[in-house]
Amino acid sequence: MPLNSSCKIVLTVWLMVFVSTAFLSADDVAPRAEYPGGFTRPPSQGKDYNTWADAEGPDVGVIKTDPTRLPSRVDNSSRREYPPVYKQRWGACGQFASVASIFTYEMNVLNGVAADTDAHRFPAHFSWNMMNRAENKGSEAYHGWEVAKRIGIPTAQSYGGVRLDKIGMWPDGYHIWREAMEYRVSGYRYSPANSVAQLNEARGWLYDRNRESKDGEVCGGIFALDGRMGELKKVTFTIPEGQYGAGKDLWTRWGPSGYGHGITCVGYDDQIGYDVNGDGKITNDLDLNGDGRVTLADWEKGAYIVVNSWGPKWSGDGKIYLLYSAMIDPTWKRGNYLGRAEVKRYIPRHTVRVKMSCNDRTNLRMRFGVSGTATATSPEHELAPEAFNGWPLFGRANAGHVPLAGPGEEGPIEVGIDISELIEKLSSNQGKKQGKVFVRLATKEKSSTTGVLHECALRSYDERGRFLGESTLEVANGSFGEKALELSGSLNQEGS
Ligand SMILES: [Ca+2]
Ligand SMILES: [Ca+2]
Image (cartoon, rainbow, N blue to C red; front, top):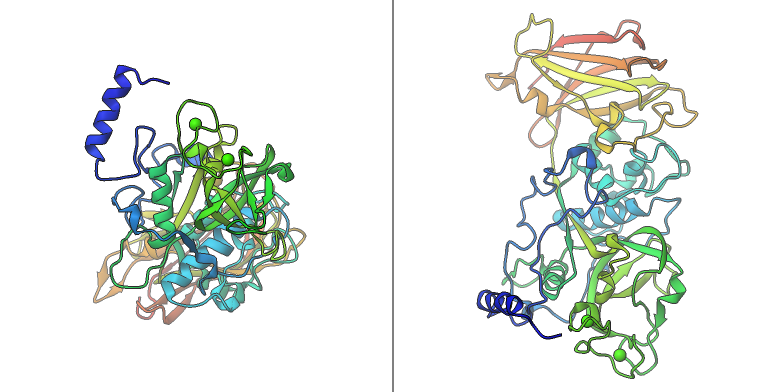
């Protein structure tokens, strides 16, 4: 197709701006963050919600890097920080990708440890049970990353494994919730991989996070992606004998039908290819889709390395190649994007230890408040933790209309809630926070939900996370329901 004059002008401008970047052409769209739909962030937060706002690393496309530095192959699943290939239980693929694989890998990179023990692995089911309505429901990667932002994720060691045997269970034990607070996501981002420039940014993230580190060892990041899995046999091929990667399986495109499946992109290999159009050659310079241009969509060579949570024996080793060109699929928009997460460690300074029961955890309404005045009768600042207010962040997804502990589990559990953010609003006197703390337990209006508070205590920690002390609030008979239960006490903890 001949270029018309306006295209020629655009082409000239592109060449002027990117003349030093060999890969870019008129068809290339620069790397950028994007929010293509409700699967990339919680719709309740509106279109201005910046999922990368609290991250420290540079945003997608901010740093211009030289793609010629990139090696032809990167496989981060062979690094010690990466956990084993898991076999998922129930429809928790989104959390096996976003938390059990990606969060685990990133946290181990941050901490400099190997994923060789449950103490350095993170469960798929903790975050899943925050949003699956206590049923076998699917999840998005962002659900896990938002749980990790707002609560944290406990290790598989304290949680009782990467997966549990029953859907919808919440952990019983303050120490599990307290541990979770330390392991957090600071930000997450989706970006398209539909042009060569975007592909190079993605390859750069997988190789060295586009930091172009000059000091020896580099360590790349990994991605969540959402594949369409129907009629997979039609798009799965084994690389023939005599070719690079012979015997390995490859997806030439997403399945022609079906629904989304959360999987993990751990690397790439530029040499892997497949003769998609059957002309006897593996090419990147022929127009295979007949649109008159040669773009990434036409490439037969170059593939992502994908880990699937269908077990270590699936496709030989639990992994498969996915052609770069497969990510350009107008019939499967979800499959056009890669999601990354940045993690951080965090030390809470003030928490609440609560032992309680409630016969419908989604109808629970728990609020904490503080006032700087010891004689105050109402709080100046308040905090309503998502998990104990029915997860308004997740819209229709929630933890289910089941008891606090899980389906059929009427008894109390002990949980921990971080209220550092609230206490930090109070002024200090000689390093000690002073004021009054309020606790309000209620239930959703017009519901018949009831609960019983057994124990409620404020805890404080020093800047290294060492326990300083606990002060107990008087609970009285602890019952709440149509009538709210309100407690208060002065903030007079040791060291607080
Ligand atoms: Ca070919
Ligand atoms: Ca083409």
